[in-house]
Image 1 (cartoon, each protein chain N blue to C red):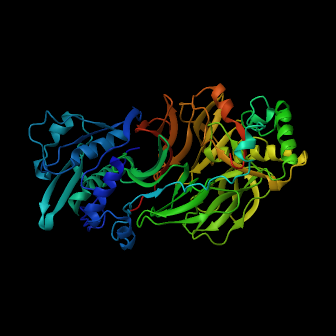
Image 2 (cartoon, rainbow over the protein chains, first blue to last red):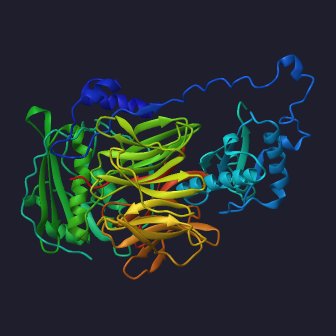
Image 3 (cartoon, helix red, strand yellow):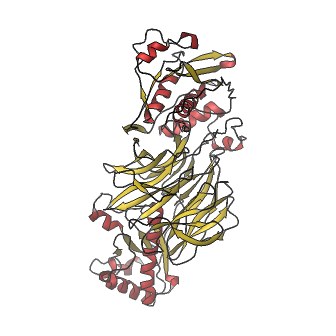
Amino acid sequence: MSKRLIGCVFLAVTLAACSSKQVKEEPKAAVEDKSPTVAAPTKVEPTPEAPPAATTAPVTEQAATINPLKDPNNILSKRSIYFDFDKDEVKSEYLPLIEAHAKYLNANPNAKVTLQGNADERGSREYNLSLGQRRSVSVKKAMNVLGVGDKQIETVSYGEEKPQCTEKTEACWAQNRRVDIVYDGE
Amino acid sequence: MISFYNSPMLRLLLLLTLLLPLSSRAALEIEIVGGAAQQIPIAVAPFAQSATLPESVTMVISADLRRSGMFRLLETRGVANIPHELDEVKYPEWASLQAQALVIGKVEPVAGGRLKVSFRLLDVFKQSQLAGLEYDIAPSQLRQTAHRIADVIYEKLTGEPGVFATRITYVNKTGKRYTLVVADADGHNPQTILSSTEPIISPAWSPDGTRIAYVSFEKKKPVIYVQSLVSGQRYVLANFKGNNSAPAWSPDGKRLAIVLTHGANSRLYLINHDGTGLQPLTQGNAIDTEPYWSPDGKWIYFTSDRGGSPQIYRISPLGGEARRVTFEGSYNVSPRVSPDGRLLAFIRREGGKFQVAVQELASNQVQILSDYGQDESPSFAPNSRLIIFATNINNRGILAVVSSDGRVKQRLSEAGDVREPSWGPAVN
């Protein structure tokens, strides 16, 4: 929108062009006064994700058996482990959930999970990035103890950058202090 | 402290090198919340300038001085004959307005479509000149020149360098789009330098102000980039296994301290500015993050939970033992050392509130400067006097500025969620 327009107007004035290629070929400006001019914005678009590999059974058979990971009556459909503020210890109430997933992973050696660590928005973004990572590793270690190998587990942290709930309440923050178990192909 | 002293008339010829748009737009809206206890009464006599010029030099200078909280701007409308030259100044008239200082000046067209901007700063009581400068500029440099004049006035009257001609960077999240923006310190001329659908955090200016290092999640994990503001080109500084984050430039701009997270532990590393020569700085089973160099390059301050709660420590870039720096409170994060090396700004959590605090490094005395409750990411202005930080008002991210003595406060907001501010260096 207008910001981009300004960028173009700006370039039009200074370089009589609005293409980023020409900008890059331009030698450095600012000789006397060292305040650098700002070049054209870099735009980062998401790389299209590869379609998930077909790991499930053919459609005809799928109708007959309910996927335990999606069955709302199965504990495996529960995927989130919640944490206290600035803590990464897995609370005992989540052990049955972790055990169920560990059991599933042991029974399905081709299944893989990513443990996505998150933090609430308060405090430092960088510290929260590290805290989210540590929470995901806490869940991974609990799964390791239950016999799941590292080959089946990836850990990642989004810190406070991907909140599920955006209100400024303790109830909401509690939802964001979380590790999500995400199966490959989901 | 007010220090008046005389300076000879200087002649500055700024060649056409500073490229600025012809007209500027303020994206950030500024609200002044408080001011210094002793404000200097100053009159800015409207400059003689053509009404067709895109900026009013008088308005830019006045807005800068007012925003600083250090000045009381006097109404000049009642003055019959506005002076533009020294021999037109009737000092008693300004003294009766209670003006301590008076600014006069004019903008004249000169050959080649250029402009000559001249001004004088006068001491009304002593009836003498404190500063006088002349600038030969392109019309597009008018706004920047007005900021430079305000910087001269600020420095002559307060004894500290001004920061009106500096720039800031910040991240704006609008809907699902994240943009990294570079703008003038007053919020004008916002330029988007990066636009992404994934988060951007931790922008850090190189000491010469030509590059910004930042962390982007565009590869679905945190990776550190360095982008040139001159060419717009960027390169990956660090994309090692795990999370790459928290870039901090060394004062000489040759190296950066960064954080790599493998497994559960975040550790500090040093890396050359071209991405070579990675070497570890801290070890152990802790979160070590948010490195920040002292201006003399002798220390790297950082956040660590090695003692059980996040606190600020410092370590030599050569290695050795880390020493704890903050002792009060159970959550102290985001250390930033002032450019004069005197103060440490950081975020303290106390009673559920996250606030900007400063610690005098010599005495370890701590003062809380802000009271919004959800403050993050403090960053010093190059004159060490102001701190910009991110906070939250009415469920929206905004930027706020506080003076390092806590007296002067401003808020800057724009559409969208604004966060992760970083104040650029003074580049003169």
